[in-house]
Image (cartoon, rainbow over all chains, first blue to last red; front, side, top):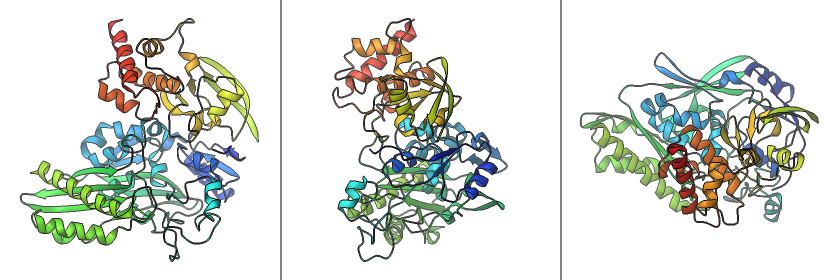
Amino acid sequence: MSSMPNFVLLRPETAADAVRLRAAHPDSRFVAGGTDLLPNMRRGLVRTPAVIELAAVRELDFIRRSGDELHIGAACTLAALAADPQVAAALPALSEAARAVAGPTHRASATLGGNLCLDTRCRYYNQSAFWREANQFCMKLDGDGCRVAPRSTRCHAAFSGDVAPALIALDARVDILGTGGVRTLPLAELYRDDGMAWLALGSEELLTAVRVPLTAGWQSAYAKARVRGAIDFPLSGVAVALRRDGEHLAILRIACTGVASRPCAIGGLDILVGRPLDAAAHDIIALAIKRDILAMDTTVAGMAYRRRATAVLAKRLVDRLWQEAG
Amino acid sequence: MKSILSLTLNGRLREDVVPHNTLLLDYLRDGLQLTGTKRGCDGGECGACTVLVDGQPRLACSTLAHGVAGRHVETIEGMRRSGRLDRLQRAFHENLGTQCGFCTPGMVMAAEALLRSNPTPDRETIRSALAGNLCRCTGYVKILDAVEAAAREEASA
């Protein structure tokens, strides 16, 4: 690993100050837990003259109930999120997703906001400068064209955060603080299907909190396939939220990660509402997943495996939640 | 650019002038010669550089030194008690939890964080707590045995 490049460290104590500093230093970067950004900086993947360190911004570290929603601050660590009894009881998919991120030491410092804003990953990008140069770099940094899809006009690096699909399946919204104030949008709208510009965030904006509805009767779960069960990014991750009404599906939401440049909500599932979870329903789910994901050659595991793994993980989770709700 | 870093290290308040881009690992090893904290993968994947920050395990290779300003940092050097091995260090020694020893400081610190929050963990809990710490020698069984032994000793003390 290369040495850390030089930068100026800025340490605001409030979110408003953090945003003001970001606006004053247009090429700066926010860092919270640093578990992804700092190694990327050392690999030369992120170059910045100023780092805005958010550890002292304590106002963003909270989990609290507000009416029919759970509000979670962006600085809440993944370990705290995974250990919170309210989250585990009401939003198990979120709890399971937080617990599935990396290893325990990463989770002790990695934050919710950091995981939601995680850089996209690709085996042609997350490498040393020497390695990338030997492959003539790629369009995500220093080069031209996409190495996994040479005829593509855009980058196919995969979004690999575990928490986003769980929150998307649970209909979460996010608060974004900018110099003009706070805006709130559905989490799914935070993302673009572009490995180079995957976040729809303004240059000075900071994700400050997540609002998750506490909807009665929803079952939810998250599962991922990875190379090493103890630590790795997802080859494919699937979150499912489901409500069963007797022998019929009342609600079904599925969202995936690791298989596109954004966490993707699987569409076309509303036609299953009011129907039983039978073989025909599973066929519809499998077709919808096949249509909406775009697993590319971005990881050590092949595309076909990850597409099949996504469908299998979804079927297992849907079956499990259906049984548990019965 | 440099500025003053104040923190409590192994129970003692310190103030040092530290460049902004210094990693906690470099501050400990190169700045203070506390070389017990190991540089393993150096990219946040192996756990050899695990230290405690306010009692929580932290990867020193992926943490800015200034990011722990005002916090309590503990390294393997702070584990000894009156010049003697701590119960975890002794348990690693007596249960053959160490072979080459390179991963041991990180293992001990991660296990220390676990035992402080859960003094009587079962084996699965220990496995989960040490999941981010890689060992290329022992195959982990002896390491798990050592942490179990330390927990038993603590429970019977």
